[in-house]
Picture 1 (cartoon, rainbow, N blue to C red):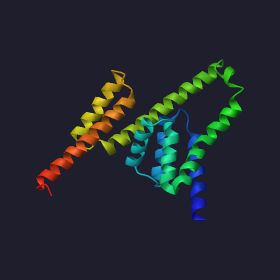
Picture 2 (picture 1 turned 90 degrees about the vertical axis):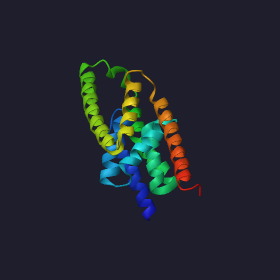
Picture 3 (picture 1 turned 90 degrees about the horizontal axis):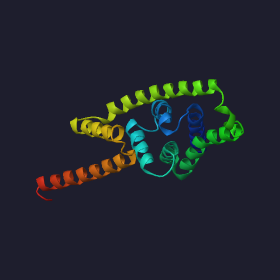
Picture 4 (picture 1 turned 135 degrees about the horizontal axis):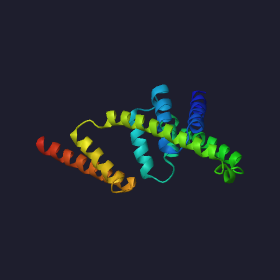
Length: 190
């Protein structure tokens, strides 16, 4: 019965996130942070950052990938499936209901103004989440330099974020093995 309750909670939580957010995976980040970290305590800020990084570098929609990861962490394979179903259900329903109206929606100036307002609100929420994540991830001069270089490459040189993520993975792997080698060498090779 506890597993069933967990699955229902997963589904409803991700449905709520799917209904209450607009604008894709990054726009969902503030809601995911509030629901998954602050309210439920299912994951940490670091987990969410990791899930987003993995979600950005794997095929599929980031929010769907994150819901799958969190669902799997909470209840195994069934949790991954239920989390995924929860996040996509609202979009599927909304798209089916609005499918006939889509061609005429853009003709109304009030719709365009409403969407502009939503974009501003999403930008503000993303700024807040970015600052929160920066506090949790930029812990030394090296990580600050890496964040700044990544920003410059993406913003000014238009390098796709996929390549930044792959580069960070490669750099992290090299640093790990160099540190492991140095630790082994300093401990006398034992």
